[in-house]
Image (cartoon, rainbow, N blue to C red):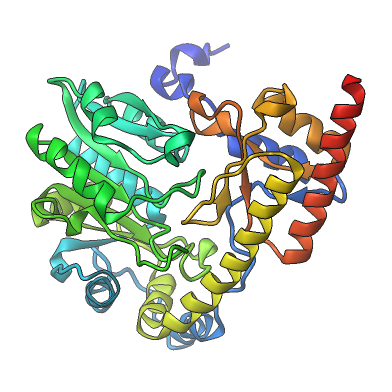
Length: 393
């Protein structure tokens, strides 16, 4: 018999499975579950985008593309970034990837050497920490605070920086909290980043999903930050193209060139059909973005008000499509709350601890579902809270 424990990569073996997937997998095995756990838009990919993909197949456009992605797509990405976010890039400063997750992985592997420390604000998406570990880096967690709307402050940043710190992951708008960083907040941390000569991987996959009335501001827009920032984004959230698996990264050419070299050996090129669809999305999809954002905003207000009415305090998230209500008043841990709610009321949420230890006392709720779906989930959750209170009497 082979002892596989001696054959497997010990770093990969020690990584915990995604806490998001655990509750999703449980709920998949149950009937009549209302799942608020997975961040997947319920909108269909707009027809004109799907049609562009279909048309590319009908015309036999099924060959490999350039490693960095089709030049026509990279040009459209630079036009889009200029039009929507006032950021200037050359097509050679863009790489098209298999989803935003690959772009994050490439950026980390291009920048991080063994022993380098990477600052990761939490609560945040589950992939940053394991990707850093697999690259030989050392994740250093910066715990964000609910009383500050989960905004990263210069004081928090300065406190965690050592002579080994090399990279800051900046995940805004935030999954799971829905928090954003305003231009003013970014301007406060930029001097700290420059002072310590850090690089930034700015995960802006939710950049189009903001509700403050102000557009998203990238840290690359802040003076002196363009040259030390890699922006990660994609098409999954903005255009409801999750299954098309297409993302991209933008940054200084030396970094993008090295990311491309890694990409060549790991992936070669992103899906061709998806790239043709993405060109159409960028050219003619602004109205689709507005339509979906308006609908998300309606759902956001419904869910925030609903949780606050139930007694689960919920700050107002101004980005992404998640809320992060506090469940400390129930006396349950995040895991206990989600498990009991799932089995007793068949409502699936994700424990805050899936996004870092400082997520204890919170749960993540996605509102990328229909209003009827959300209303029923709130009714069941309110029943659950009332039954909890009655059982304590």
